[in-house]
Length: 157
Image (cartoon, rainbow, N blue to C red; front, side):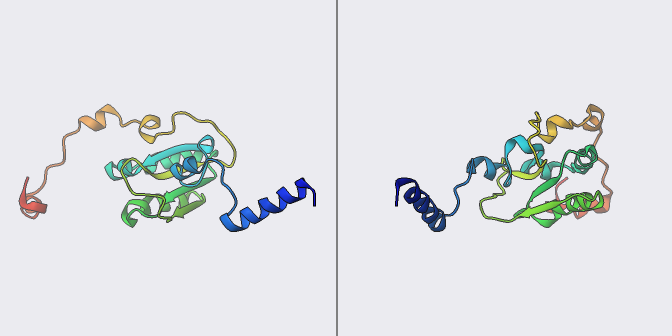
């Protein structure tokens, strides 16, 4: 056997033993299995707990660029279910990623909206793409009835 056939054989053996090498594995872990250049919008684990971003997800789906939505399946169902419903109603495709490598730390991503090809969109953070209007931030918190205050968790107002 010549050197080229030998290196090809060695490569196949290496792939069989260790698996096919991945391109940018850290980047793929960060963006729930896809590449940064394909990402249109991201929602972090902290952001998904802060408030609902379903209108932002709907808007991105209506643009027609997004072909796949990756959702961190390690998060509680009550956080991800509204997004699954919105995506299903829009006829979009989604994948729940439940591998242990997709952590639930606040700085990790909960949802990634991606295209099949590179879009090189910036910014991709949902808070930067869809900022909360100032009028919505200034609204006072709704008043609780005496019954709600009485049974509020911890008994504190």
